[in-house]
View 1 (tube, rainbow, N blue to C red):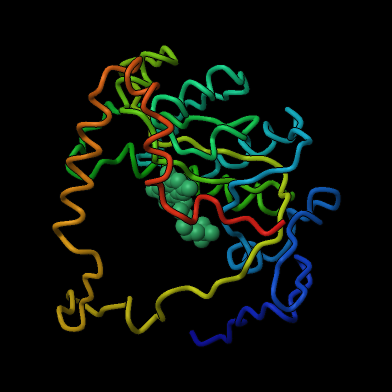
View 2 (cartoon, rainbow, N blue to C red):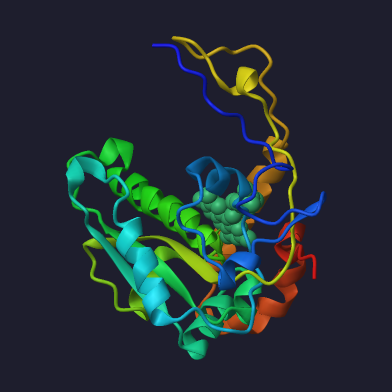
Length: 255
Ligand SMILES: Cc1cc2nc3c(=O)[nH]c(=O)nc-3n(C[C@H](O)[C@H](O)[C@H](O)COP(=O)(O)O)c2cc1C
C-alpha cells in the first residue's frame, strides 16, 4: 500500500507558536491543544527544566496520568506505580543526596516505579514498560502546555526506595519533573538523519562514531559509583562541590 505521509514543517505548523527561532509552548498552558496532530506533538516537544511559578492543578496531572496509562506494557500487565512528590523537603533531600541540580527549583515531580516481577529479566521488560509510560506522559503533557524532564541523575535506587518507602517488588524507573512551560524553546535540529540510524536486516558496522573517550567514561562511571556510596550525610555536605560537574545543558533556559 503506498500512501503519501505528511512531512513536519516547523514554520507552517499552527499547533505551537513559533517565531522563526524559538518555539513558545507556554501558549498551550492557557490554550491546551491535546488534539493537535500527533506529528506536531512529537516534533515540537522538547525537554523543559525550568517551569512557571503556577503549579499544575491536580486534575490536570491526573488527566495526564490517566491517558499516559494507554502506553504499552510487557504482557499488558500495566504494573506502574506513580509516586507524586510535591513536598519541598523531599525534593530538596533528593537534590542534596546527589539528584540533578535543577531539582532545587522544581515544585513537583513524580517517580515512576514498575513491578519487577517479570520472567523476562534479560530484556528488562519492567524498565521498558516504565519508559514507554514516561514517553507517553511527556507527549501528552506538552500538548497542554506542561513541560517535563525525564531524570535519571538520581541517588541510588535502594536509597530512593528507602526514602519513599517503595515496596521491594517495585523498581524505581526514573523521576519526571513537570510544570507549566516558562521559557522559550530553542528548536535544535536532531543529530542524525534516517539513513544513518536505519539498518536493513543486520547491524552495519561501518561509519560508527564513538565520540566519547572510553577513559573519560570509565573515570566518570567510577567517580559516580563512589560518590553515591558515600553516606548520605557526608554526600549532602559535599553537594555544592559536585554541582559544577553537571552537564551544562541543565542550565539552558531562554527567558
Ligand atoms: C533515560 C533518560 C535519562 C535522562 N536523564 C536526565 C537527567 O538526569 N537530567 C536531565 O536534565 N535530563 C535528562 N534527560 C533528558 C535528556 O537530557 C533530553 O531528553 C535530551 O537532552 C534531549 O532533549 P529533548 O528531550 O529536548 O529532545 C534524560 C532523558 C532520558 C531518556
